[in-house]
Length: 411
Image 1: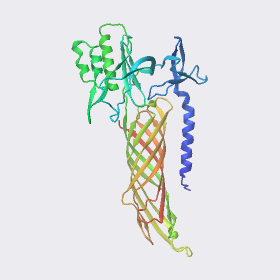
Image 2 (image 1 turned 30 degrees about the vertical axis):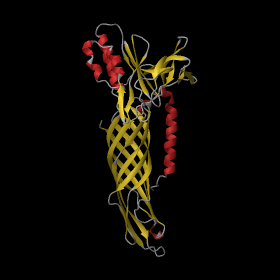
Image 3 (image 1 turned 120 degrees about the vertical axis):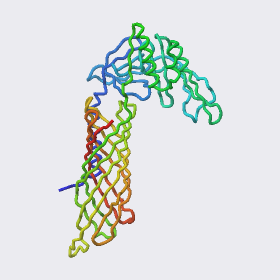
C-alpha cells in the first residue's frame, strides 16, 4: 500500500544524512602539509584545507592523523602549505585598501598605501612570483622577482568627474619593466584579473627558463577551472494527490498513486571557493501526473462517482547544492530549491459538481544525490504542491511527488 512521504520526515532524513556524511568526511579535509614557525623551524603536519575565499589569519592542523586539532595564527607562523595544493606566506607589505566599489571611489588617482602584516596566497612561484590577497571588500595582487621585497601591482579606479571614471593601470608599467623589448606587447592588453596575471607570470618564468637560468616555477592555481556545467536528465515520478473541499466535503478523496515521467536540463554554476563544494543551479523540467479517484456524492447510500486529475507542469527550480566527496570520482550532494510551477492545461474533473483548473504555485523542494565521475548523476527530490487551484478558496489539492532522476553532464 502506498504511503505518502511527509515533508517533515524527508527533511529530517536529509538533515541526518548531511550531518552523518559531514562527520565521516571531516577527516578528509586534513591534508599533508607543513608550517614554518617564527624561529624558522619547519613542522610537518596535517592542515585543514578550507579553500579560503578570503586570505586567512589562522588555520587548523594536526600533528598526526588522530592528534588533537590545534590552531596556528599569523602571529606565530611565517608560512604554511598543503603540498601541491596551496601555499601562504606572511610578510609586512604596503597595501592600498581603497574601495573598488563604484559608490565609494574618490577623485584620488594614486594608491593610499598602509603598512600591514598579511598572509599572502602564492599563485605562481619561481624567478617571478605572483601573490594575491582578498578580503570582504578588495582583491589585490603582489609580485616579487629574484626574492626582492614584495610589491603590490597597482590598479585603481578613480573619479574624473561626476559619473565619469578613470583607471590607474600602473601594474602594466611595473610588469613592462620586467620584459625584453621584443616582448612588451604581452603587457599592453593585460587586465587586472587572476587569469591574465597567472598567464603572464607563467610565460615570464618559462621565457627565462629557456635561457638556461637554473630555477623552477610552481603553480598553485588549479588547471582547467570549470565554473559552469550543463546536464540533461530524465526522471521517474511517484505522485499522489489528496483533494480537500472545505464546503463540499463529500468531494474529499484520495487520487490513486501513479508513476509519471520527467525530463529537463540542469544549469549549474560552481562557486569558486571551498573546493567547489557549493553550487547554484537552475533545473527547468517537465512532469505530469494523471490519476483517477472515486468519491461519494451521497454518503448515506454510497453512490460512487468518478473524478479525474490531469496535471502537467513546467517546473522552474532555482537552488543551492552542497557536495561531499568520497574520493576523486564519487560524491554525494544535498540540495534545496525554490520552485515555481507553471501549469499546462491541468484540471480536476468531477462527474458531479464543479470542475477546477490548476494554476501556478510555489514551494521548496529538498533533494539528495549521488555523482559518479564527471558525467553521471543520480538524485532524488521531494515536492509538495498545495493550493494550486486558481479560483476557489475552499479547495486545496495536495500533490506530493518523489522523483528519481538520472542526469548526464554534457559539458
